[in-house]
Image (cartoon, rainbow, N blue to C red):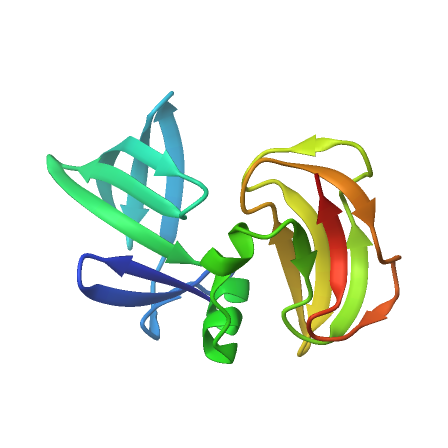
Length: 164
């Protein structure tokens, strides 16, 4: 489930085979029609849209649909979980390491020591509370050390990766 804020209005979106918006089943399709344009089809009704701005770091999409500009703030499942636990991701961006926000099991380590990653690039996957959570770089980083291994259990607050 994703949460999107459009202006002052919050919308919960479930994607996949049986998509829904705020619990109401919908058919959603996106098709790219030009480099910064796409077609949105919602329950068979087609609308043309243009991407005005994409801010991956802040998960903000500004688009123009039929002449109206919309700012959409997106929260992925991991963001919703961190909010629920009272963890502020902004404070983590100022740190030089990645810490486990909750106990879990390291499923996959994507990042490699010594390599540079851009903000939004996936670094690792942690399973917690029966959900797989993809941890992404909050800013441009270079991996100095990887402190964990795949299939390792981690505790809340444990350092997972150190950045240069």
